[in-house]
Image (cartoon, rainbow, N blue to C red; front, side, top):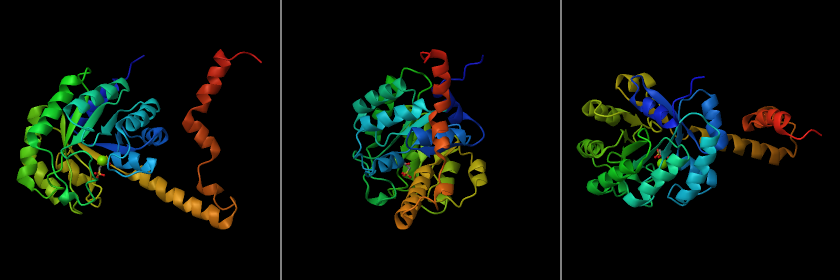
Length: 295
Ligand code: SPV
Ligand code: MG
């Protein structure tokens, strides 16, 4: 039988592919499996979503090993590649080197690091007040990460926060070019505007020097066709499973609390059998038939 390409190779192929590809946010083993079942070819392990499922803020309050522990569950439940939102790399170049090794051991296909300072703050919370990393320091981090990977297809994505911080298009391009030269496999350009104009201007100037990734959370009304025409490599739907879960959980919790009965919500929630299916209960039953002691 034909072996699937490694998760590292799968992510690299997505980043390099001519048609625009898509990653969906997931934040634990179950949501990662749901993303794969929906047909996605890759997962975005969002810092916002993973921190919020822990009930903490997107300010590096969860430790990097807690993130890596969660990634292990996500990797185990999926056959598609995972790109970790690695924030700033959780420290300096040395911390990133260790992170890369620990990610590869769990078959996490790549990491995205952003040019801010630890502890980071989410780009949508006072983004313009957030300091950016020094270009040279960030390039050193990228080089250190690339030099420490053992699988040639492990990807490091450099995320440019210059537009978020209000430093302008020229600075964003200057940084992207430096990160590209330092060895980044792709550039993620982020924006907090409700229109895609600055992203599209960046894409025009960038001209496909390296794969370009975007996160259209705020400019969600822009038709996907516009991104395709702009030559965007990968679009990340960055937080939609955690937001779906939060909305559904709040609604069901209120309903059960207020009515003190399950009769109204049974049809609105997944059947228990669906949870068993998502957990792979069938496989264990089959294994028991094969390996279990006879009664
Ligand atoms: C995330 O999903 O955690 C991201 C994207 O980094 S954003 O929240 O838009 O900064
Ligand atoms: Mg993040």
